[in-house]
Length: 189
Image (cartoon, rainbow, N blue to C red; front, top):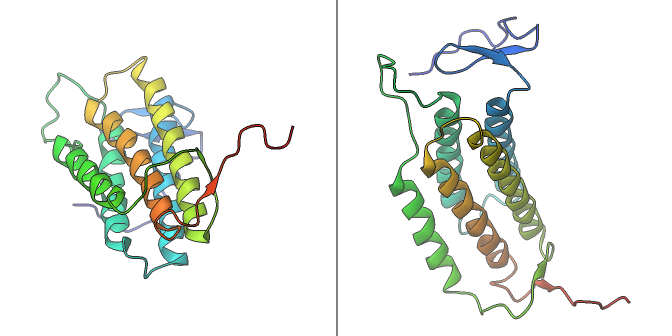
């Protein structure tokens, strides 16, 4: 259970913060960058929902926001063979499967692509494309972290599937792909 009675603690004033296992690290630590980018993605999805709270997939985005806190919690507590005295929250294969099912369901409404898509069309679609790119950056930051530390593999898979889902949802937000802006290779040469 989370309990926050004070927002400022002054413990980060010297450029350090605590991980979920209590260890102190620099705020520039790759782990902090990784879950900070996940937090940025989550905030961006909040902007999507604030702009269009009545979109048909609002409940899906809210569920993803909650899952992204799970991703952040997973990344906040380093994998370890040492007992922690509690079971850390970890992203599961079931959360990934839910994203895959959501992709398949949303993609059924869309025509196959014959070109890449430029971000745009509707405002919601454009914002979902921004979320997709933040998700890809979060994925890159997790890959960087994986180069030096052990990470729950479901975190990586979750972020990879989520960026795919955000792409499909961006198309859905463009009248199920009817308002997609297609890339025309070499059009301006």
